[in-house]
Image (cartoon, rainbow, N blue to C red; front, side, top):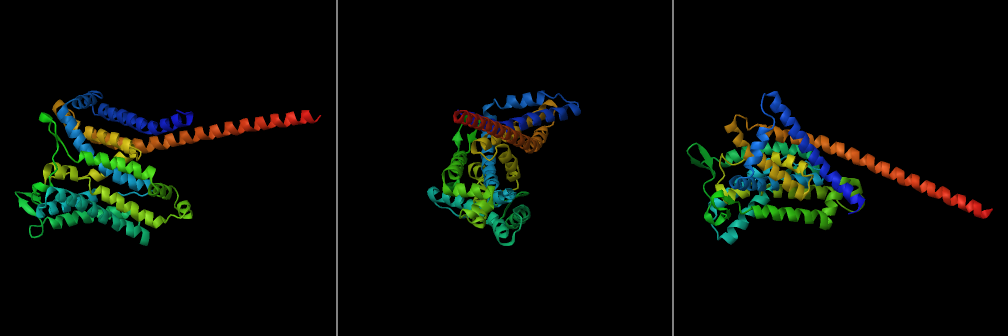
Length: 374
């Protein structure tokens, strides 16, 4: 591998590694300050990762985190901050659950219908923010935050008994979906089942990489995110790219809740997971918008979620995992900037050294010419 390639890999890995190291140290300091053992909680969580049933839970949870983080990463690539992934995936999951409860088609038609419903719902909801940005200059951050609140209200309306809601005890639901829309999982015996849509998460990651790195559209997307003026000069319509990126981000976000909806709950209720969209932001940051990096970050986040409940049985608060997640996000921002500055200084020194070497060679050549002329 060339020296340049090695340095590029080093810069790519250094940020996440430093962020994780700092987060572990700061979490240990928090434990010490509260009079707790700073090592045992992490040892307990690492031990949990060795159990097959916990591994299944981690993989299932990571699949949802991964899709949500990919949705965020598409926005980041375009220099857009889609903070509305949370509302987009929840509203998409609910509409898919409603369609699945009322439509009863053969499985080969029902499942694509539910997937398409979720994608279109998420794309529509994010598209509102995209249209506001390109037509009125409204910040996508403000627009998507407001749309999150509106999505919560829309969900509350759809839950009304005289609309689509079904009351089961004190729990609002959309009713159970028809079995033709269920996606069977991968049976792991006593350890449980891995969601069938984990495969979809993998395919989305592959598609994300191919689109960004091997297509003209991906190049235009990255170029527009780096410099809209430069992209426009090369014939790319920045407004069209902004709207397209928001639609793609929302469409992916719409799929984030489907692994558990189609593989486990088969209904949308008050117990449906929330907050996945916000966690996707931290995961995308830690993974540096790379499909492989995001995969590792999603598994890390899922491990913190699923291994931390064991802490309650040993006198520790499981919230230490939440604290660590927050510290990781904070450390990521600081460490990436530090690594960027370090890389920039190394590049400047290298260029300076090359220029100095060039001047020396030039001076030597001139001296030789003068001697020859004499």
